[in-house]
Every structure is written in structure tokens, then in C-alpha cells.
Length: 260
Image 1 (tube, rainbow, N blue to C red):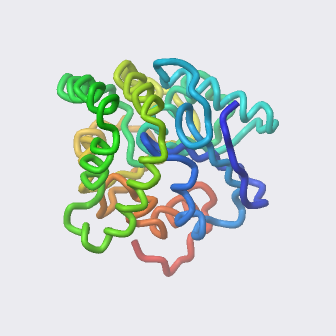
Image 2 (cartoon, rainbow, N blue to C red):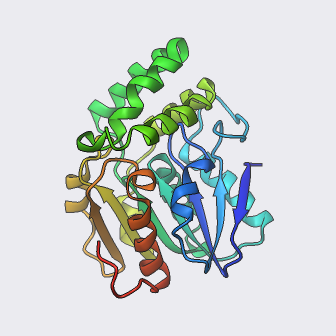
Image 3 (cartoon, one colour):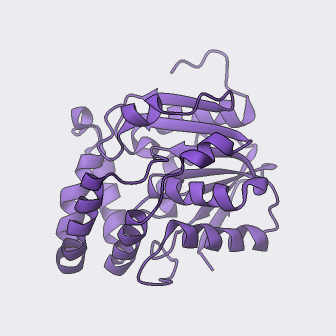
């Protein structure tokens, strides 16, 4: 079973899925600002953190199935689900398979589109680099996920992101890349999911084509989006603002004088 940690004693269950080359430790800073009404269930996805390898390819469907085993064990019938980047892809797969279990779905610096041809080719090229020179892959790639305009301010957090990525087993990273490569378009989930959908995106996100994604969001009253002045890692770049959005959108308890 996937490794997980629980914090908080709130009555609203919020399941948090990290992204590629991350683990459940990424939520620590944002957690400090989240409402005490939440009980947080933080998951290590397959091949990441303390969760084991399952196969040579960790598909988003596999991640969704393994997540369901955790929520079944915890006897959670209805909960909020948030996924960062790859965790968002896994969340969409979960919402497609088990929509009746979700109160809300939050795409956190993620996308409902499948990879385009260019992105797929980039992922294929990364196979060899991850296998032969994983530390260099991490050191070269992680800084590009942060806001280019604030890298000096974010230096400490960039180093933390590298440290967490380097703790990820290379075979886990490779299995995840292969899984992301084969994932399918999930526009249908966005169009048919009956609960609230929250999309939090970054203006300077180099990993997601944010403008295209937001422009093509289905025109539905249950979908709400926020565009923040940051890169791909809002949990590190804008933790207080991200938490405030979750507090108001999932719980409706944002202080009236809070300014984004």
C-alpha cells in the first residue's frame, strides 16, 4: 500500500497528491496556512518517497487504484482531492473512476490535456538521462520549474526541491515519466464531474501551457480558476495564497480582508 501521513483533526478530509520527483514533504509550508477544519491525508505516489515500486510503468490509472486502497483502508467515503502536476493527472484518473467519492477536485499547477507531440518527445528523450545521469537531470530541471523572475528569492526552496527530487529513486522517476507519457486527455472528466472543480495555475509555469489550458476550460458553473504570479510550484512559491484559496473555495471561510 502507498505510504501516507495524516495531520490535523478537522472533519473535512483533504487528500494531497504530490508531483513528479516529489513526496509528501512538499506540503509542509502550505500546511501551516490551511484551515484547522481539514484533516490532511498526504500520500507518497508509487516509486516516490517511501512508497514502493509497482511496475516498470506507473500509469495514472495505477496511481488512482492504489490511492483508492488507501481511502478504503481509512474508510473515507467522501473527500476533497488535490493533485500537484503529476498528482493532478492521477487525480483526474481517480475522478474518472470513482467520482462518487469526491466532494471537490483541485488541479494544482497541472493540466487535463494529454501531452502534445513535443512534450511526448521530451519525455522519451529523458529516459536515457534519468537512467544514466539522474542527479544531473534533477539539477538541470528543477530550477526551471520556479518563477524565473524570483529565482534569487527562491534559492532556498529550489535547493529543497532538488534535495527531495534526489531522494526519489531513479527507477521511480522513470516509471512515472512512462506513465505520464501514455496518459490520455481528460477533458471529459472536466465536462462531466458533478462536484466543484478548482484550478490553480501559475503565470510563469514552464511545465504547463497555462494560457491554453485556462482558455479551454469547459464553461461550467462548478469550475473556478485562479492564475497566480508564480511558476510551477505554488506550494513553495505562494504557500499562503494557495492555502487561502483552498480555505475559501473548499470551506468558504476566507477572512474578508485577505487580498490576493
